[in-house]
Every structure is written in structure tokens, then in C-alpha cells.
Image (cartoon, rainbow, N blue to C red; front, side, top):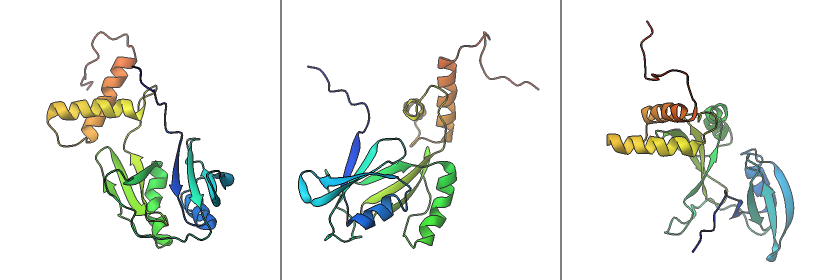
Amino acid sequence: MKKIQAQGVHHITLTGADRQTSIDFWEGLLGMPFIFDQPNLDDPNQGHLYFDPGDGRLITVFTNETRKADPARTPMDPGCVHHLAFNVSRASFLMAVGRLDERGIEHTGVKDRGFMDSIYFTDPMGLLIELACYKFEPPFGCSHADVMIEAHRLRVARGDYNIQEGHLADAIEMLVERRQQSLSEDRGPKHPY
């Protein structure tokens, strides 16, 4: 038996409100370019809007002109989507609270998650949205996942409750040491003064 190897998220499709509300939220608030529009091929009563979340992949939204925004929280029962998280730069993250406040959108404020900072709010249909900003940049040639797995291993070995900045810094140092050769025989920390 062989795996069916996934290579990333192709797209996520959500049930939205009407067309303009969906465009105003996904492009007008979150800055995702509106790149494609066609009927829902399985239900001609709905539109199917496509947005680029910033990495060239897709967020798509089914719309219906009779469906209006409903801010009641979407279900969080087992099997339901709890939230969607979108990566934002530190510069955008620092502006997010003010920009949500300008629009009167309720949010959680900044939440420290150890390895990232987060802000939560809901879309017009009550789906919880997270803006997430990593507290680190992975070394050249490594991914965020590479750093996270090493930081996790360090956290577990040290008996710590959750990943913190020290785990991240040590994981980055380990990855650089593994990936980048050096002419030095001893690459350990030194005190040069």
C-alpha cells in the first residue's frame, strides 16, 4: 500500500454571503486579490469567487445574492472547521488592530503564542479568522516547519510546556550548523572579548 502524497493546500472553499460582501471582506479587508469569478458548477444559484491569499494558492467563496451576512459563530462541533489562519508580515501585523478598530470589527487583540503572535476576529458569516505572524525567520534553505520540528524536540527534551523564543533561537542555530559547512574545527559558542 502506498500513500497519496499531498504537496500543499490546493484551495479552501467557504460558504460566503452575497457577492459584494464576500469581495469586500476577502479583498477589501484582507487584501487578497479577486482573481477569478464563475458560477458554482454544482449549483447554478451560487457564484464561485476566487481570491489569492498571498502565496498563489486559492481561497474560494460560494456566494448567493439571497444570503446575507450572519455574524453568529460557525459551529465548532467535532469535524467542523475551527478557524482559518493567514500569515501576515510583522509590519502588517502591527497595523492590524488599528485597521480592525477603524472598521469597528471586534477582535481579540494580540495573543502571544510563543512562536508566533495572533489576532482573531470573524468573517461576515461567523467563521473565526486568525492573522498570524511568526516571531522568527527560518535560515536560508529551511522552512518554518523545519524550525518548528526542531523547536518542538528541544521543548520536549527540556520538559517545557510550549515553544518559546529560546527554543526557536536554538533550533535555528542547530539548523544552520547542520546545513552550512565551516572551516572551523570548533563551532561552539565563544566569548571574543
